[in-house]
Length: 389
Image (tube, rainbow, N blue to C red):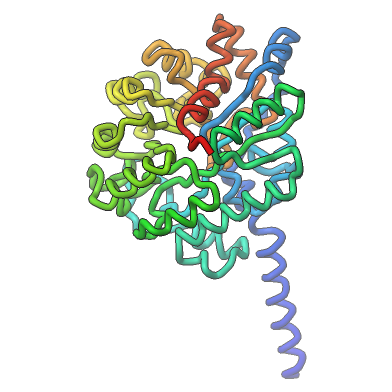
């Protein structure tokens, strides 16, 4: 009888293990990264021809967080390499998400909960990642390097201006190579130790988001409690990242922190994914007056594809937000900031990005405006601000 009970217990444990390994990660992502059902988008021959000539670039996506082989086509999430190639993407910022509070409330979050702990366990990440945002960032950076090694000529990590120039030359020759820039969504990934920037730098870290959905050791989040600016440690991180020609990302930063960053460094920053409060009065978005200050500092703003950023996340709604941004800041300051695979619901995935080109044409955007917003601005920004070598 005892042997029978032990066998039953072993089978139950095996079933739980197999469920966690093969079913649970996909189920969780399927619930969080949704493409809402829609009829196929109609793309005219004119829009398709124009889109094929664009260097599409996006300032923020989170596929590093999820357990699937991003180099192969998937039915989950918003991105993978084949879908990005179909969408004509040339350059994508890929961020490591290392901590996220329960609920991800736009109004207010404490820092005492962390859903990424459970996700790391469920996806069977190394045990070192279970309690360390830094180890999670390292693990995701290593995953990105693995994609680079396995992808051959179809994907490469972009670390400097030379890499980006080579990528653009490959694209001009007709190769479908996609470039990825490594970022972190919140510098709590340093675990409070500035020396940890060295290891992430070695993995190719080039975009440093300061906060995510909660206040951290660097200062206040737009969705935190304190609303504070940069702490002493935050100033150290910004200055050191700036010295290394890393790009500072103020998406999710409290307004006071944004202002203090602009006062602290001369190089332009990005707001990788967000929207404009003047057209979408969401607590996810900054006031227009602060967006103007960012643009005056040379910032590039990535317009998001989800409801919290655009309020209307249809292609027409996203393009309306883009037009608002152009009218407010000038076309040179507007880019794409999808937040694909970032626990968002969208109406078009990476393979369907031509619908933005189509909608801009329908809304009487000029070809120059379309080229700049769809990618040229982002490419030019990184050519000017990445390390030279």
